[in-house]
Length: 140
Image (cartoon, rainbow, N blue to C red; front, top):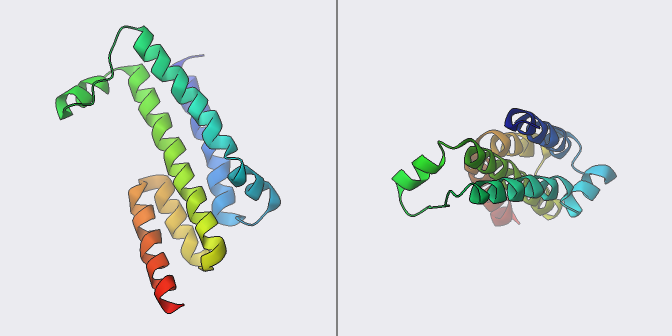
């Protein structure tokens, strides 16, 4: 499989999960996927594969300076690992937010933008959720 194919597969793995988190967070299938972290675990396998592939090529993983990281992200395998890393961790944060909301009870119309922003912009969605969480906790 080519990197482009893996890229497409990884993206297609997360799309249905994000839709379930946004539209059907309480459905038993969604709960199963959240509880067992099915998609993040599969993405973690892709990530591990790309890290091993990168290391076997003789390249290092130097995160010690901005220029080293910039150089690392000019290599296709490293970019793939980085992308899958983003997909997995953003999804884990989305799952955590849905789990937190089981106790908080933030209305789904307010949760949807938080989850969508986490999917598209990672930390921005997390920040928005934490803002709503803080307000909800202060009211109770």
